[in-house]
Every structure is written in C-alpha cells, then in structure tokens.
Length: 82
Image (cartoon, rainbow, N blue to C red):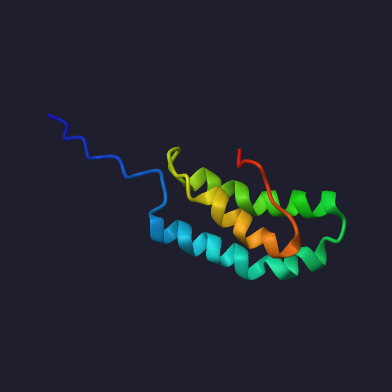
C-alpha cells in the first residue's frame, strides 16, 4: 500500500509574502533611480512583482494595496496585479 504524503502548499505564508514585499519596498528607490524611463521602470518592477504575485494565494487581496502604497510616494500606482 502506498501512503500519499500531503502536498506542501504552493503558496507563500503571510510572513514570506511580507518579507518579499519588504525587500521590494527596500529596493524601490534604487529601482526607480536605475530606470528613469517609465517603460523600463515598469518592466523591471513587474519582473520583481510577478514572482511575488505567483507566490500568493489566489484569494490574497493584500498585495495590490501594499504595492500601491509603496509606489504612492513616487506618484505611481497599478490598477491590478496579473
């Protein structure tokens, strides 16, 4: 008889998400300075956001407000994380 082990969650814990978002927020001033062109900035920013979003459960509604809060001092925001 084969015993199946429970599958580990594919999603990050709230603490892991908080750490990933904290690292992004910490790096944001450097990211903005390194990418003065809006197109370049958004490409670089979304390359950082996509893995975080992929790690969040589908019902996690805390990402977008937190991301927009970190972008607000720069006069930026996003409408949705895809």
